[in-house]
Picture 1: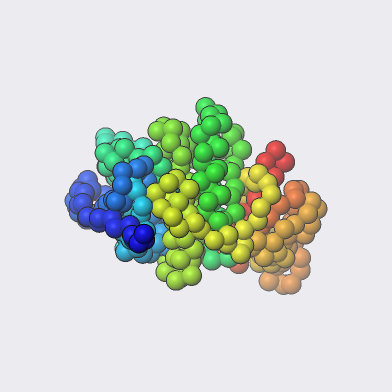
Picture 2: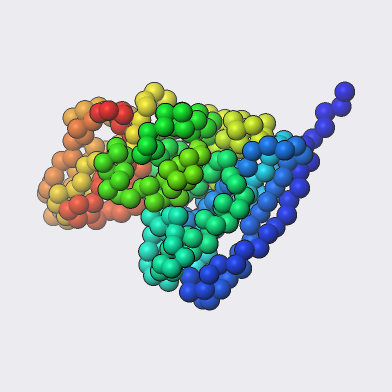
Amino acid sequence: MSVMRPKGSHRVHTMTLPAATGRGARELPVHIVKGPKPGPTALITANVHGDEATGTGAVLALVKRLPELLTSGTVVLFPTLNPEGLSQRTREVPADNVDLNRSWPGDPRGGPTERLAHAFWTEFLRHDPDLVIDLHTDSPASIPYCIVDRHLKGSQRLLKKAETLARATGLTVVREYPRVRYVKYQLERSLSGAVLNTLAIPSLTIEAGPKLFLDPASVNTAVESVLGVLTAAGLANSPAPVHPTRVDGGPWRRESGLRVGQAGVLITHTQPGEAFGRGQLLAEIVGLDGVQRERLLSPHKGIVISLPERTWVVAGIAAGTYAVLEGD
Ligand SMILES: [Zn+2]
């Protein structure tokens, strides 16, 4: 028996974005790849934050490779959800400087960002998705990781499904902030939060690579992690390798602990991916006079996920993003 390579189809559909979300109405390509057999539909979105470019590179690489790799189902890919932010290198949507990732599912009568979110959300629903993967990037001093949102109604079945898919990325998996802060930070209005909480289908956020430029290794990590999720969802047969930075154990949750109390130079004593113990010195703040202003000791045991992309810090800045044990 000869082994047949799956041969899927790729077509490009053009959607029109509402006016006033940039320089007037704008056409945007949406890629639709179909496998040779019917199956679930996955949406892959990138660049909600216009300065986070790795996902855009990953989507374009996936568009090339998926027709050969998809065994069944449909994958709909959006290279950017924030085209003006991509061209102007801004996190927010430039028209009103609002964070698109706190604006889902959008509002057709709202401001430019709300209208943009609504236009995309309408497009997402047209494809009747079973799964959404949203691609972001953290700082250049970060391990790649996958975030699972909180389901505010607390469906254990849905969360288990999302966590199984998250593990298939091959990356470190962290749950979002605890419920009270999840709501306070409006994370149910992030894209993956709105998908999980409104549509009740699994959604994942993958954070991989530096901002603003395409690092080939990071793009590859994002591509492999997406293929791993598609494999776990039954659409492909390309499991993700376990990433060398992956930290097992947990369950972990995201923690942006240790707010700086004094202005000064942030000197960190840990690396992304490094485990630390309770009471360990994670960073110190030193004045330009060389005098130590503050010592930041961890109240938790955990792992360093990312360090901020800045050297001079002021009161209130988080000294890093960590993963700590759920319940700690
Ligand atoms: Zn982001």
